[in-house]
Image 1 (tube, rainbow, N blue to C red):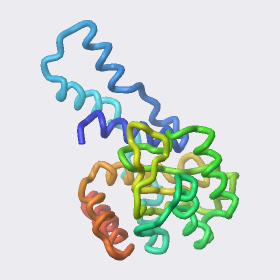
Image 2 (image 1 turned 45 degrees about the vertical axis):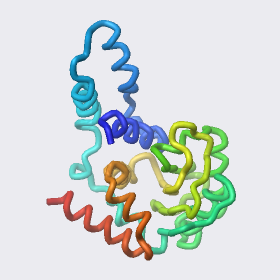
Image 3 (image 1 turned 30 degrees about the horizontal axis):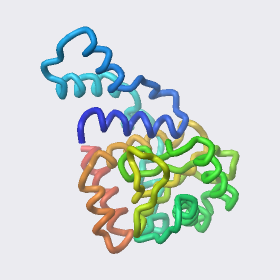
Length: 220
């Protein structure tokens, strides 16, 4: 994954959860402006430097006392090989564990679909990854996130990142409590081993244990 792709994931995630802490311009646009006025001899290096500039000192999971990803998900919120007929069905079925576990109301699921309809395919935050969500007042009861791997990828209408294979449904109770967990999710979305685990796992427990191990490594 290139520095620009990593930056775009970070930017898209925080844009979707409505967090003003990460409100930065597109690196692609910055690169275009720079190249209008000078010759870039190391484009990859410049992209990396811009990425580091804009992502440093934003949200440091070690500096805030907020739940980590393993504390807002569990094996019961992780699903494998979910069959869906369209993007609405994918959100509905991916969010159902949140209802089953008492994290959100049934109305919250419809609110996620309505939000996606209103905002367009921007919930597809990275290649093959969607992050449906809704406002807390729509029926969020607890901070939580469900994770689903679709059996067959579904088009959400995002030409750059379709089809979607992985759906992460977020239940947020405010604009801040979930930020540490989201920062961790961003890191996982940059990790090829995470996608391999999602594809190869036969039991949700394997994915949850991968998350726990990732947190141990990051805490060292």
